[in-house]
Each structure stands twice: as C-alpha cells, then as structure tokens.
Image (cartoon, rainbow, N blue to C red; front, side, top):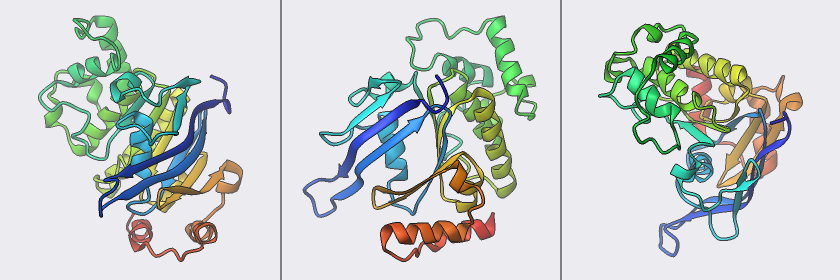
Length: 275
C-alpha cells in the first residue's frame, strides 16, 4: 500500500459499557479516525480516556455501538470477530505473558504466530526454511534468541519474552500493529530496549502501527503522529511537522485548550520524571 493512503478508518465509533445501569460508562464517544499506511501513531491519555478500548474495537474484541463503522484496507470489518481480523490486525499486550505460550518453545510459538488468522490444520510443523526465517528474524533483536529456538518461553526474562511477542505479532506481516502499553511492566532499561526494537521493526517492515503509552516523552519521541484522548474522545491529533520540537508542557497546553479543562493527571507527568 502507498504511504499516506488510508489503511484504516473509524466512523462514529462509540462504546458504552453496562448500559442502563448506575455504572454505565461511555468508553468511546463518536470517534472518527483515519489511519494512513505507514503511520506510527502514539496514543496518550489518562486512565479511562478510552485508549485500550480504542485498540479493542479495532482488534475486534467487541463491536462498536450501532451506527459505528470500521474499515481496514477498504473492507468493512465492523462485525468481524477478533479471530477473523487476526490476519490484518496483530497486537502486543502490556503483560509479557499474554500472547506467548510458556510451556511451548520459542520455535513452536513462532510457528503458531506465522499462521495467525489462518486455518492451521497440521501446518504448524516447522520445516528448515521456516526455521531459518525464525533465526534471521530473531537475530535482528540482538538478544541471542536465534540460538535458543528449543528453549521454553517460560524460561525467558520479561524483556526477552516481550521482544519475542513483538516478533510474533509482526512475522506474519499484518496490515496493522497494535502496541498496548507493551513496555509498561518492564524495568526502565529493558523498557527502552524493547521500545527501540519496536521502532526498528516498525521502520524495517514499514508497518502501520498504533502504540498506546502512558509516557508523554515516549509519545513525543516515537512515531510520526500523536493522539491525545480524554473521556472517550480524540481531543488532539498532531502530525509529524507539528509534533517535532514539542515539549511535554506543549502537550499539556494543547490538551487544556482542546478540553477546556486543567490537566491534572500527575501519573502521566511522573512517568516522565521516572523514565
């Protein structure tokens, strides 16, 4: 697909949980979003802003409310299940244990991943050609995992396992990669390593990516586009030319101008001090 050509579109996408109860929550509120081919979008916002719900809706975990529409590669996927979107949409989760199988080897995990969204049957068996693909892909990480194909995934460190999850999510060349706060549980050093590996893979594969983060500096540093969410809405959408050179304080001002509220989420601000 040509760069800057639309890859995914969300139109009038809302999501309400516990409708009709005292705990009713509008997680997404009439969201409109165009994702262009090769976009690397970072998404920032407080807890409850709608960031993960946005990824869940795109991935097909649940459908939007009636009237909402999602297209990927020009195809209406609004009512398709998560499984049926798996060939187009892949995801790395916050927890390194999610998306990888502890009691299977690295090679077995990758064999499952390369068949993502397909009818697996008996094709999970690894042949020599596929094994060489696994080795060459893992070698790019610089972690030595290409020499440990027979190692059980449960024996890997958190950073190694999340790096493997990243390879698993991208090895089948999905149209859209979703990174759901995928470094949030890692220590600062490993956090940075996995972020840099993510950027390297995204750039090498020219992969269209949406990355949710709680860290404003990460949101500013990575990607070509930045979205700020609040109360289920996209308030700020900053593209590359305006994004470069911005500071955390500039983002706070942009949020306050768009929302008409003071920015009071200390947890996001503290992320930038601690990182």
